Image (cartoon, helix red, strand yellow):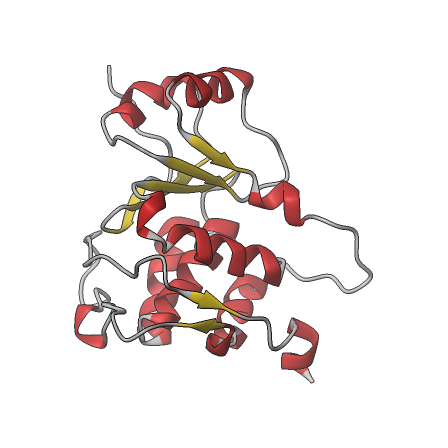
Length: 198
């Protein structure tokens, strides 16, 4: 039987989100024709999942592992991780892609929340979407991160198709939104979280 991963949802055309997939989810994932998987967690995928991705030529981007490093200045999410994930997920050549982490809502929720800011969603709608996946879990730090995220870290061309009119916060149903941007998205680092707080 088809078994979707926990915390599964549609972020946009060609972009999905979920908790880290397991062997039980592979048959369902195959129906989505996934081209790439972005693992935001430090933990590696299950060997059976890695084998499946390799067998079907699905690119695995271990962004969490690549961007992890010990630091005296703790933040719930690494800024470079968020920008790397956005850069990868928003490029059409990587679609369809799946964003995932071990919880299904913390790291994935932050990346999706920052994407929503770029799409000019109201912050209340971003919080609403985040909490639908997080449930009763406390996520103050993650929401604070999203709120302070510097949109100038991402420079978009005029063909960006996210708009306030596409905001879905008016109801609680998961809806797909139009494609995002092509390969000409440009990213630049201007601030760190510490600078934002200062």
